[in-house]
Image (cartoon, rainbow, N blue to C red; front, side, top):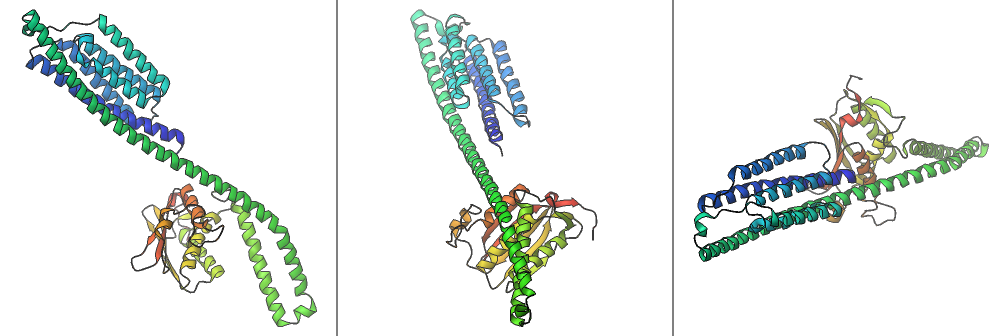
Length: 435
């Protein structure tokens, strides 16, 4: 996931949080209006205040639709939403006493939201707008008709003061609860965003590391081509020399050396073919079942394990592109299993839904907890040798490029397992019968 996408997801989460807070504001306004009008008997312009509440409900429905859409949510859009909330609060205060209304301190909650949610320029806009609204409400507002609560001057003044203090207390409780709840949720969103950003940066660093490995491998393959060709020519000359040709022991060793030189050439050619590419251009099309059989057979011939329990339950119906990168990813897992369990390993291949699943198990000591926690990190190896620990790292990144996944763990009876999962659509050419 890109950094831009992560930022967009965090902004979308903040918009959802703002929607939740606005629903609370709507419920709180309805409750406050009902309490003041019905219980305290104070006359309020219910029609106008009701229209403001309906505006907030409509704004929330639009915001909810926006939050559920796939279009990116921007900081500017979030800032406009907060400005509309400030406008609605200003109208409600205008209709209910202006700056004399104790709930005017809710402007401070809007400022807090702006400071937490928005970039500094937009946050200062919220500060400016709320300040101007406060100043405007000190001069322009509709006074509250206290009716019987203002019977005598002293008694009315005392009643107004009591109501004002009680309103300030309710406003303080409401603002405190909303601020703590909101800031706590926002902090959680920010922590989740920072974790996603850290993971994206780690993956970018790993991919850069793979590019460097590919360049080094390609360069080494080019450099090794010439000495391998020279060695092949020399061995060929020796095979035709009478002193070596007539000696069966020398002839056998020379033939074996030529075989190993040929294998080295094949490995070099393979590196040049796949270095720096997620899928080799020369990839061959073959049935899934045959491709897996050939891969395992090639590994057996080169590694010669003591025992291999292999079962292939895949079909021949899916024609896949069997390139060297996928083969090398499987070879890395098989090599690690064989090192941990020289007595033998088990390989199971099957199709589960739309995925190809290959499970490799061994009878070794299993993974250490620290190894499982650092699974797939470069140079994380229990072998204690420099340069080790790249096998699973490269395998995981190959699977990730193809949309797959890897799982590893320890078995209850001893030993360990590594399970590779690849979507067939990432491998398949078509599903025509190619058998």
